[in-house]
Length: 429
Length: 103
Image 1 (cartoon, rainbow over the protein chains, first blue to last red):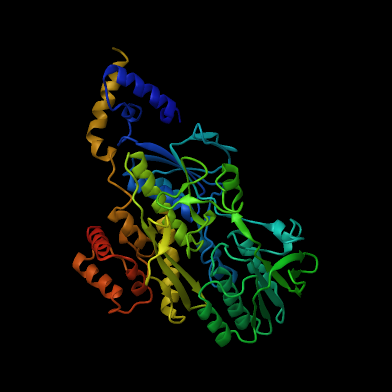
Image 2: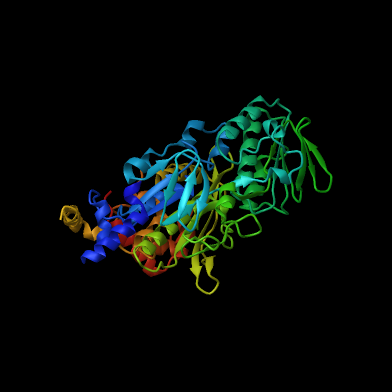
């Protein structure tokens, strides 16, 4: 670490100026292949952070030193985890490693938790791996769940009432609850008011679980309790599939805002006092930028999300910190998706390469594609292209671009699975 | 003098790498623009999955495809919607980038 310490670089630089030698920062890196132009620490190794780490190396030609700090040793994909829950995909296929970033791109991957930041000294502190100095920091925190917004959803209730809105052990546990469900049982999912992670995700989940129950336990029911007034993504496509393929199995109730749960009886209560008891109760609480974003101090919208400059993804709260992914106060019509986080990662990486090279970053254009499976074979999509608008200072959907599928198709089912394989590689390999 | 020796060596070693010392502009580059396609078509357009690879595809062919998608003359599941988000100049840059990538 000491070779890359900025104070040391400055000291050497000063000495060099005294000797009439110009380009002295290179001295510290004489053994390296190319001269580093700066150091970036990326915090969070999901779709956003892992992509940012890779593209910082790629776009800088290896001249930026990149350290990725991530708590978990494995990358577990939320996209396609609904297929695992419905028994359509092997869990192992959504679990990936960070060795590609290390081997192919020279990213230093550190598994530790960030516990503090000194914005002035530009140092970030971890629980088990010490401190890291940076020129720029990219934070890709993801979301945390506001369990406290649902009365009774305490740690004990969380043992039996799952969210499975972060992929991992909860994904497998919900799979098991559904496998154990008796034929004739009830599965209920509550959806929080938007914005939440992955707008079509809940509707994909209930479609795939309806498909599973229709195939294996046809007397069972799926209840969808949505705090929103309507389906939040691909509305006509989802409701069309439900009417045609899952009639008598799936029931959708809008404006059903879950405010309390009883873990012992698996009962959920709405804002209006309606009660639903289910054999498998799946609660998605309201969401916010993850705790780490609060620790670093970048949460400055409603106490929930992070505001950024949309040219550079730089935080408007903490200097030299860029925020990407689901934690952002999203631009208009921009979903909180893994695909979008990957795109944020590239945009932030490019801006930082330019900033560390003394250039002014140019605004960009990014795109989103979200596939949802509706059964074992067919999928639907929503897509959009977002371009920076200088007047509004945000990314706006390009008029006329984007759209949704005409109808569910097996071709899109194949593309949806190819998308997953490809974006995992683009993010991690 | 003892201390200046490593400095001289450092400068000598650094010299051949000067080109990489100043990476090309990243934001606003065709690389960044083309990276919008990498999520589905693979990094630099290289993939072995069901969505077609773009690396090494001839530039005029890619321009024709993208413009036909953009103008609604060619059917697709997705590309007829996404191509409408890009200017003709950007399409040219994207096509140029992929045509220059190794398959």
